[in-house]
Amino acid sequence: MRESLPLAEARRHVLGRTPALAAETVAAREALGRVLAESIDSDRTLPPVDVSAMDGYAVRREDCAGASIDRPVILELAGEIAAGGQPPATSLSPGAATRIFTGAPVPPGADAVVRQEDTRADGGRVEIHVAPEMREHVRDAGEDIRAGDRVLEAGCVVGPPELGLLASLGRSVVAVHRRPRVAILSGGDELVEPDRPADRGQIVSSNSYALAGQCLEAGAEPIYLGIARDDPGDLRTRLRAGLHADCLVSSAGVSVGDHDHVRSVLADLGCELEIFGVRIKPGFPMAFGRLRGRELPLIFGLPGNPVSAMVTFEQFVRPALRRMQGHRVLTRPVVRARVGEKLQKTAGRAHLVRVRLEYRNGEYQATPTGNQSSGVLRSMSAADGLLLFPEEATEIKAGAFADVEVLDLDVLARAPSAGGSPE
Image: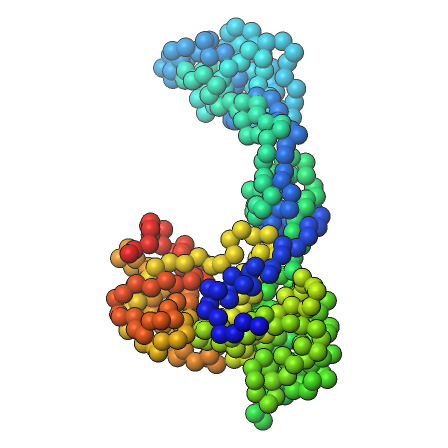
């Protein structure tokens, strides 16, 4: 077992032990946010034929030379083609135009479409008020996709445009990486569920709610194991139930106190701890391990303090869950931000400081949320990001720049002219 690791080294170790989950087949309409486990090649050409991009009139461009609103060209109407209709078998005759609608096939011989707004119909004739460009308002066959094209690569995250592409290609089902199932256990005689009285020294078990929310936000499926008492037998029963998941997350009981039994019970169940202790604050007593001879579940022992549990989940569990789902980007975006007030600490641990972020005067500015105690859960609710105060540093001066891991992506949307990060 490796102890007291730096943050980056501990994360590399965890991710090095994290496999991508196998594929499952789901209905394409339910694949939003999932990661493709297969590449998608097209067996179709889209559009399959030349089609109109506008409601208007299909014409021969040479018939419309010099047309203007003052000197319109008058063409004979040669029929009408609706979207989904069939084009005439014969080419458009000189001096003729065909009424056409958006998405309808362009008739043979036509090489442009004139918008309805640039015409005036008059019985069996139409006045053309503009001289169109070659292929104007015509979508060429294969303009979007040609048969044989690689349209989507494995590893692509399915968003709304990808759903549309899958539908266009006739893919009603698709292979995606399975969502990880995460068993969540809280522990401690002092804990009660939110609907129980907490007026005699009890503490509401908020960690299970926060961690379940973090799992859902990361795309995983939380499984609640309840609250384990400070009793090895109760712990063993609940932890054993969690070993059928892809990931087991326990908050509390991983340290070395008299009532901290999680490590010993996990050992009895066959878990080999690979990490204990990461040089960060909050969150030092983080443990990670796996069952002997098994790749899964990944087993995380997180600290019991609410902020410590959430921060260590962000740093270790969330990246692992994203790797399981096939994501290529595993961690949160990082921005450079000017620190609004002086920060101080002793060397030896990296501090993850909860900060608010604002974008002003062409740069991000970070301000601590206030009390940084690991028990002040409101500091996480108020935080837009986690500022990395490096392990060896003892001071960050007001006005200096620091890296901030962005938790609230709306912050990035509020900085449309940010460009690059300031140095």
